[in-house]
Image (cartoon, rainbow, N blue to C red; front, side):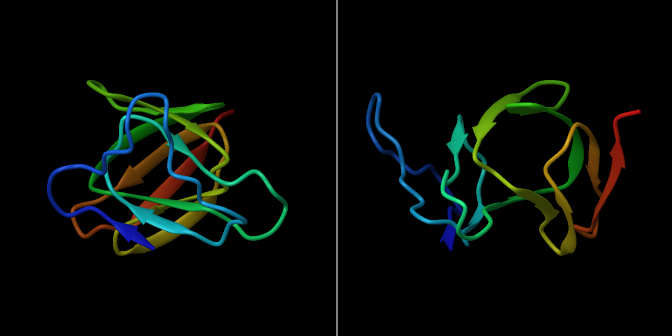
Length: 103
């Protein structure tokens, strides 16, 4: 598990954090997120309170965009997890996530 509680995780220009074979849990805000690409394990992106538009390859709010690739599951800080799919993910003030799939 990678947890960034203050500041940021610096990996350098054109570099990345290699999550390996999967089974990772990430709790952080990021500029871009690349999960694992092998069929072993599931990578979970845990998000704080907010409303997120989930599309293929990106998650956005009204004022931020997070490109993502290789993430299998989205979750709230305190629970509620859903397979990555287009729709709207809402994480309430208690950190619980709910998901409405795109129609």
